[in-house]
Length: 362
Image (cartoon, rainbow, N blue to C red):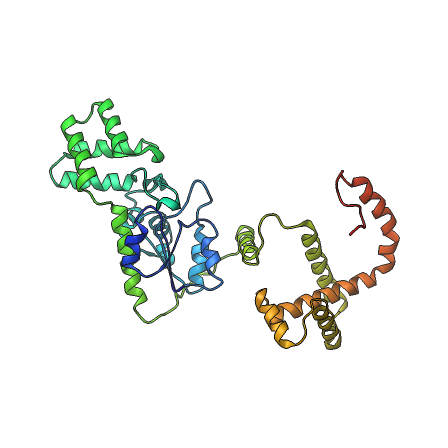
């Protein structure tokens, strides 16, 4: 995937595919950019993104992607908002909506928000974005269909409507109730917005695709940045969640796996303290025992097993070292463990809930 675009209701997928050959993904959400970085694409376009039903894409995700050479572009919707916030760091903004955000003409997130149908129905927009209503009033005013006072009143009325209910009809109804705009101007704007106006979000989305198409045709140069992304605990947590997903983790991690991971970390700390280091003969013996237990005979079968599980040779040797260090730690504390086991078993049985496995069983 050299080009990836996150696209939803701003532009029909079929139209987008005619403008740019790319991998099109659903609207971006938290973690999606990091999920691409195992094999980073060269260009990423952000058009649409989720922001209410799921966590929105983080600014630091975009910064991390750019710090790894990815060229990131934004327009039309969530992409325009993030590009306005990050253009100083190298994110490329495209189109009028980006410029409005960048220049402070608009500031609210809900300017670009719409209610839309699910993916199976092509993310069909069910409401109008406030930026599109702004653009339709500008166009109607420039065409002499409405006056400047009516245009300002239309935008004010649209801003007061919740984004999930914001349509030309709901705004017109609010205007009729208020009685501040002549009925003929309301009707003229309605007709223009329904029949003669092309969505600004769609135009900006198409402009972004054209921009990426031009850039992708040029010799590739990775994005270079002059910043360092601080890996806060929240960033680390998200990176770890994405890495766990990539490894096949779904749902809560079993407690036993967490405990064995902790034990390996404790064994590593003990190894540093006491200068432990498994020797080549120990590692070779451990590898032989592992492959025999798995029924693997010969390098070809071992290689196929590693490929099937996405393992590198380094990862296999690291796991074998962990197991040897844990075994050495257990031997070092063998007497203390044996002394503590009877009480540990009594407590485990006492704390066992109905239906739990008998401690020591299995």
